Length: 205
Length: 205
Image 1 (cartoon, each protein chain N blue to C red):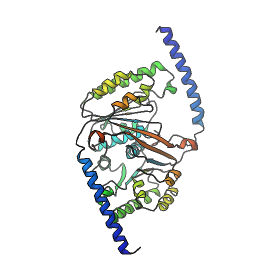
Image 2 (cartoon, rainbow over the protein chains, first blue to last red):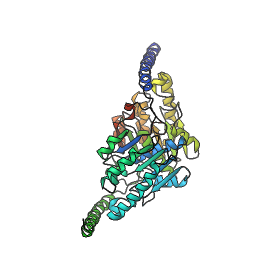
Image 3 (cartoon, each protein chain N blue to C red):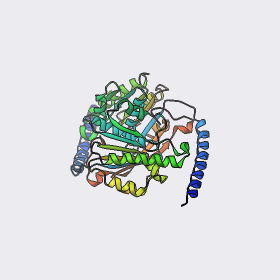
Image 4 (cartoon, rainbow over the protein chains, first blue to last red):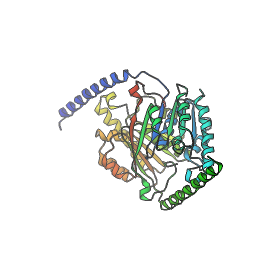
């Protein structure tokens, strides 16, 4: 390729990108609304809770105030729990679950833990002291009917308008997805469990 | 429902969960391998970079050492950049991109920025001082042929065995997915741009 060819390729690139930027600028000029979003991460892939914690990290960077309620996880040390214990001034972090349902094997205790977690969540949804509220694995508590869907939807509709709320867990209820502003499905393409790899610190927990 | 019904429901629940736990324990007993994973987050949904930052947060909780190289983003303040600037002791954070390709409109500068970012990445992949390395938007640099795929694959195959590496961005190359231990596709279900909502702090950046 000659130098002249290269100059021509670069010129065409700049022209094409200028057209893309103009189109994008027009599109973005219409995006003027600021509002607290209701966000749902569902699907059977990894990354639902991780993506919510990543948003929490971004919020902390901007000096926003973060609250986290964990509904199901909770009996074992996790990276997120250790992180927020290390920086307790950054976040109100409440881990109310006593482990997955197959660990506790106790429906009455699971329901009591879910209801206690929900009481914490409701308080955060009405508290202007929280710009970002993460309700981790709330979908699981809804799936097992540990909480009443109507009650949860009503509290989410009544949340503070500027507050962002993220809800994670498999099998999100269709009514919740309907209410959401932003919903992402994490789809499994490949998982290391198939290679006999165990859950590892920093990745799975 | 009588009290006796309730007792019976709880008994059945405990039995079922005990069976699930036994099956799960058998499955997990086979997961004995510990290894540094090559992880890819792709797809057109949100959450690819967020989930990687969430894993970084978990790693920080465990006291693991984290390195981040951002390939494309980089010209504007972001929550993640502000976060790691606030806690510089937690992470080596390098943001080499000068913005999206439609912003720079300069292929020569984009290629130079991608190659400089890649040099940082290669150094981290060989440095036992990093337990977790995030190569944010590397897929974009590969898609535009700013970096040679063979060179990238060879460096990833030669990475330190205990190190976890996460690569994000749309349109992951099939050869990269082939090499990955863990791959997740983030699928868009619903996006607030459709309601005229603009990108907001803590959520999009």
